[in-house]
Length: 207
Image (tube, rainbow, N blue to C red; front, top):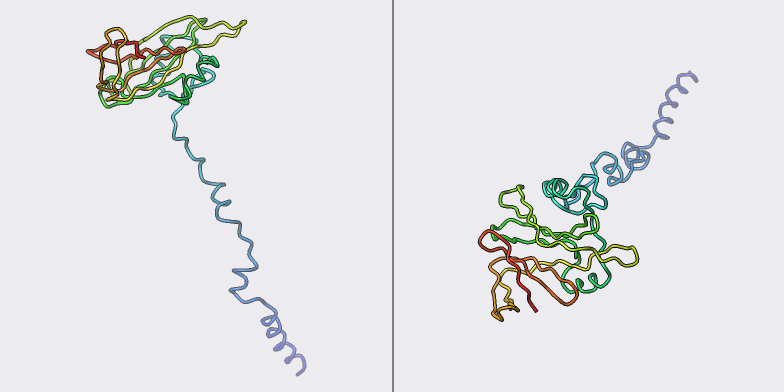
């Protein structure tokens, strides 16, 4: 009889000592924070800026088709070091004196202009996009790099002049309204504007 009572009491004790179902779910199961769990399986976020994947070092944020054209036409080109004076002059215009972006030929697609170093020369190039992802290079200017005790640097800085801006041509002393964006190339206190007209770039010195 005692053994029967013991067998009946034992399950009741076990049931009383066991945690309730809700307690097991909420308190006795350790679950990592959702954000950390997702981090282990989610792919890293993609950068919104498309960068090149060639061997040029340091790289520039340029479209891959432009990088390929530059490698073909200017093998071994490098991003130039910008002289301190040019960096100072560029501050009021742009944060990137080596690159300017805009619709330089008036076809509503974004083009890019840049300065690059090839050997001991500085070359300023515009990459126009007549068709989507299809570019052509136009060389705007070429000069020797400034040699400061063996350190080569560019004295130039680039920036975009926006469509509709009124400029004064120093040669003709006439005002000129930009029909679309233009490339401005500064050196010291002098600025030359390259605007695309009738299928080619025209240069114009402005105050």
